[in-house]
Image (cartoon, rainbow, N blue to C red; front, side, top):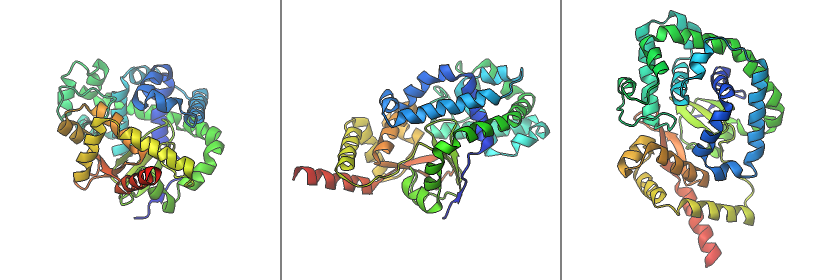
Length: 336
């Protein structure tokens, strides 16, 4: 399927993310390093991206307008705030209809968002002791008092967050315009229908209908149904094949294969694509550990992302046999 390409970020999503990141920027830096690894954060090619990202956040700070209500949302743990953001993505009309929705409908939407988080094994929320129901999370000590209050009376809180987002979308747009010239060449090359699926982290047969670049966070890729949200730097753009690139591939794949858990994951994916929590349960690992290992495997090219046929809201990991074959060929050429 030829995707519908969007050359600009979805400003509702950018604003949701920037509001929280701008307010908690210093607290989130150690978390970002923990999620993506100190080694990745120190790579020379990563540093210009991070500097541009920081300027984007600073530009948003220049224009944003916060109200007293923001103190409540800005104080939520990041994972719970992400769950609220998922509600706005599951039903984009919520941004403008939040005041019309009653408690039951909003609670149903929270349940759907929690189910999405549960399936994905998102490491930002501690789901130890929880099952796939929102009620199970609300009973755990790790659930914040603020989030519990929001779930009891969502009709009191969602309109406030929707208003804050609407008010600050112009600030996000101005922040984007400030950095857009520096990424325009990349955007023009990458967000073409005939280029994206061949060079993204997603499977070539992924049923992508819409593509939105995500800029409020440097590394992210996920799908909701047939809509893809892909961090504009979390991509695999091939360069010219030469000795240096082949050496880099050999090193990256060899590193990826050096951990027993990653070998177990690849063996599991050889049978069929799996999602995060499924891998965690089958291998006796935590979802956070699985996410760390799959990120290394994705960066090596051995694994790609694709939605599954059973649940289109889940992100599945699949083995990339072509990369395995290419690695084997390069290894043979190098030593035989």
